[in-house]
Image (cartoon, rainbow, N blue to C red; front, top):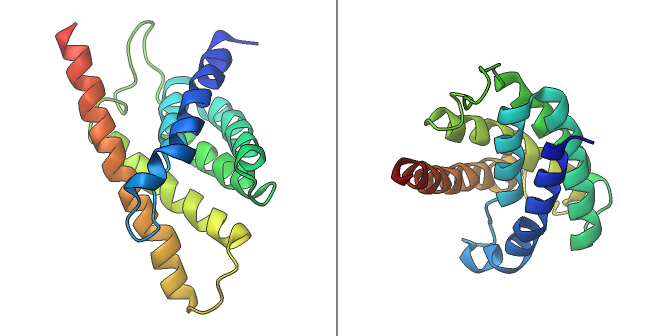
Length: 166
């Protein structure tokens, strides 16, 4: 097992605690950003598509088990999101970061992957039939994706500021 899998799983623990305890406190009308997806896309852009697909499944399955959600819904959604995020992986020279990680492109990639993730997750775990399909797509797909992309921009500013002070 490569060390990047172990590092990702070790980072998953504080991220899942943060996602399930702190993130609901910053919800807007019940809509929360998906910090686990931000972590998944970060590692996918660093390691590649196969890595992102495997870690997406592991992250999603562990999230389903820990959160008590519909088993397999987050696993399937994060697997697809990790696979799609892997299309933006570019090979870099040894020791160099992927150019998509430290630019605005990261937020756009997170937006696309989050849109796919939240839409699939809502389709498999949601049972709110009071709204039309377009309203459900907007409320449970687009708005959480935009919120996640905004949070990823904030995280990107924090990471790039810390990297520039070193």
